[in-house]
Length: 165
Image (cartoon, rainbow, N blue to C red; front, side, top):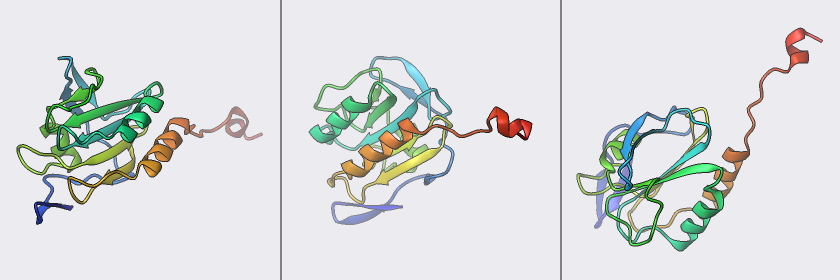
């Protein structure tokens, strides 16, 4: 995948991840100093938001994060320390490992602007990677996709189906 940076096309580094594929396990050191392994199966939906600059987190995105933080784990990973106060237990500036594994690494100093929603089974169910570092996310699509992923109930066999009744 390519993005535009200063009028120049840049190919994002490493493996591109697509909706329907399994999310990789990623070791991530949070701002509170705790190292977590994220991206695998979990008891809550996970969200990775990667941001290139200190001022990249919009107020509208903050509202969506606040509205879903009880039912999903929303990680904010940035190339630079953000201007806004974020939860240090779910935020990191050590972007390189995650950005390479998710296919959104621009270079040693920058990651692309992206959002990934990973369901409880560790599968990517939503992806948005912006074509440049200045554009804004489709917040309506992100909000509704996150709500849908949180509310999703896995259908399995019922006792009656299993018994052949």
